[in-house]
Every structure is written in structure tokens, then in C-alpha cells.
Image (cartoon, rainbow, N blue to C red; front, side):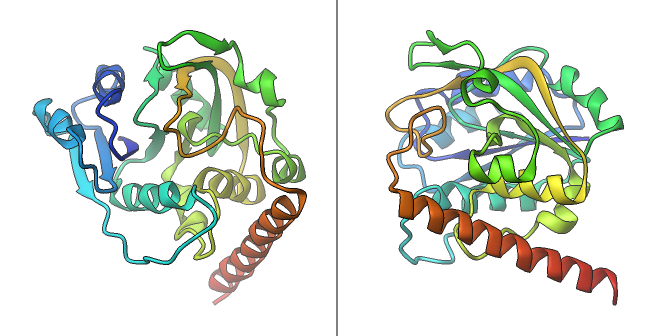
Length: 249
């Protein structure tokens, strides 16, 4: 069974096209998990208009109201909520504003015979679907490697799919603000096998309302970047210790 996890927030402009590109690829037993972060536009109405039992909508209840300097934490907590609701053996993460190529699922599934997590390449497009970059992998030199990805992250959530077994060590996400895609990717690097698939089976849309700055030059200061990476490393070390303590009980 496949679970497609999507976080939404005021995505009325693109969500219909994205859902259409996904729903044509899943079976009757699969599911699309929507975690909405309080949309006040027509996002939820559009989703409900599909009238498809496979689309399961959940409202993200924001338990922590603390301020954060990391704006990606909003998406991380929302995605965590979606993943918690997923019941599939394989989980595909997706953005509300991208478009899946018709072979997105079928091209990835065979790799789960040998790998726990698969990261696909994508084309980067603008608001009008014009191609900005032909390959995200080429743009940022995407490849495996723990320290490579700690230094320059290759893990783009909307391009990631993984076995649900990963959640045994990747969930819950750290209390500290760590991006969900980097977290899952680095956890899989440590505990499992990862594959970077060069087929471009997603159109990854960049526009003014994106919460992340993937595919763009970072404007963060050197000290911000150091603090950010130390935060990730600390969270990883704590999770490794906790995981092995649990195994040795």
C-alpha cells in the first residue's frame, strides 16, 4: 500500500493540478494524506470536490506556538502530522504546488527491493511551468554521503519516497527545528540504504510563496549556517543514542 503525504496551506492556485497528477497513479487501496495548516482560501474545498475516499484530510493542530527563526519548521511539523496518519508500506512525500510525471510511482517502487529511501531527480519550473533548471541533481550536485549532505543538503522532500520501516528510527521528528527532509535523509544514511535516482519524475515548482529556499542561493549568514548544522548534528547524536538504548533493552 502506498501513502502520499502532502502538506497544504493556501494552495488553491496549484493543488488541483497536483492532486490530478497523483491520483491517476495510485490504486484503490492507496491513500493521499493531506495535512492542512489552517488554509483560509479554497484549498480544502478543492480537495473535497474530488469526492474520492482515498483523499484523507486532516487539520494540523499546532500544539507548540513558540516562535522560531527557522521558517521551515512550519512545514516540518505539518509533514510530521501527515506521516503520523499514513498507513502505507511506502510513503511518498509531495508538495502542494508541484506536478508528478505519470511514471513517478511506477519508476520508484522497484528500487525498494534494495533500498529504504529513494530520492528522484526533478525539473525545476516557475509559476507558469517554464523550466528553470533541467536537473535539480546537476544544480546542487546531489548524491549520497552523510557529511556531504550535512554541508550541502541534497534531500528534497517532494522528491523522496521511503519504506515505512524508516519511521522506527526517524519518528518523532526532533523537538528542535530540523527540516523533515534532511532529517529523514540523514537518518536513512545512518541506519539504511539510500539511492539517488536520476530519472526526473517531478516538476518542482518555485514561486514567491515557497516556504523553503531550495534551488536558490542561501542568504543566511555564516554563523547562522554553523548554528543550524550543529543543531542537526546534536539532534542526530541524541537520536542514535536513544535508538540503540531502545534496541538493547
